[in-house]
Length: 380
Image (cartoon, rainbow, N blue to C red; front, side, top):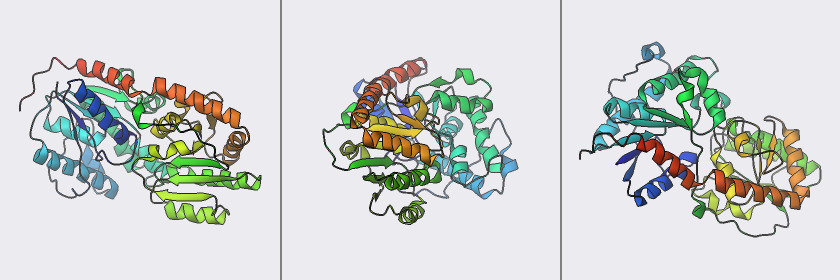
């Protein structure tokens, strides 16, 4: 059974999908299930002019909106690139973004299509102040859920909380299966170490949705309470300068290191003590599972997939979003109690190994793919 994993971003890009799909490909190839990856290079811009076919809504009502027009142009570019580069057919296509999913079904209507919806693009854009809730862009993006439901042969998502979020936009949400992300344990190598000063680490794209402004205010309060620490921020994004200026204004210049983008942060994480990320929304939050596999204590917000990964007080600490005081209290608890911190980290590692193993994902995907194995054989 020849399978295509259709991505939007190239697999070397940061993020949960990119950190998982190449390892899924490797495992399936070893099992004798040929699998290839396909994505749109960043350099492809403004090439496509093909007609876009939507079944469940009239796309013309959104014409002239610059954000939607840019999205639709990317859709056309993906069609152009697929026609140019796809030289064979497949028994099944598994897409990981709405654009490749809808493009593949438009170009290969007879090929079974599985779609994993990994995150809510519209919610992230709202939190990042790019679009307004209820506005034209929001309505367009949420319309895509119904379009995907109409055209995909199977829809998957990564957490129960995100399935709940999507449900109002679907006709049959009960048909959606939840397969949480999984990670190759061989990538993660916990290291025994003793840091004289507690080391915090966070890994994310530097955008408002990740709540790093809340983290900096929590750290400023922690410093006022007399605790020594260093916060390591791995990632880049449009608000980096703003965050650096906020750190200076909060008198945190000596406590924070901004690293910028790093391709394999999991190689760096085991040397730290506490992973913290006060996101305002997360469909899954892959970086929490990755930090747990590095044997770090976890602190996150009680939102989305984070609250499904962290059992508060058992394998990490959960705090309300937008609450710097509560976040400071949680960090202070772990800073002042190394035994508790170690026990939380160990429990997080145990849960991540069991619940978020790549082997579990492979088994679940094999079951999904096998439902379509009776499809016609691949034609070269």
